[in-house]
Length: 301
Image (cartoon, rainbow, N blue to C red; front, top):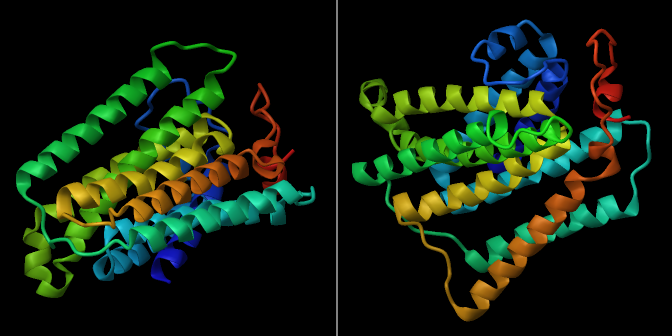
């Protein structure tokens, strides 16, 4: 239930931050982007929702395994879809609801078949270094692809948003792993929390990932970036849970078949839902940047 509430908060955050960042023209990595966005109330609302989601996620990870908590957060795309249905003026099509059902069924099947459990409270330092360097390498490659290699003006906005969204999803998975480490110190007092490396890595990695997410949301349509947020966050977190904390999932033949089928349904559902007319029907930004859009017009055409 805590993970479900966190997914609602992160969905609210994505929608609000997209509304706030929509008018930003992103052609390169801009460290000052957050300072400009911080002057927009709707973006600040999204940030507040993200912080609340973070608190709920920390609490959920204190009681549950990464491989259990993070997949539940994938439900955020359904909440995003609901926002689109409420704010937009167009009706909800049958294929949208079928995609939502497929996503929920896939998530439920994967969790039921995997039955994630076990794991240690703390991971060895060498494993953290490997995980951190691998995540950093992925982000560096994504930035090179998004803002340098193979740049094509015609397809750049959606392509850039998709690449940055994928890198953001992987980065949020790493942040979730750090949250898991951090949450194990919450009952040890302020002294233990202040002396833990996880507090400082969480602060730095969280701020960097927030900046990366802001670029993804400003770069192009929500439909392009959201699948990366939604799919790669729980998948990377589940893999890190097994790599870092030794969390285990069921590996029997039938279990693996169920997990594979569940992931397939989840990916198909997320993909179809993210390309719904309610999400993918976003109009291009006016070239002059002077047209003022209402929240509903900002999200749907």
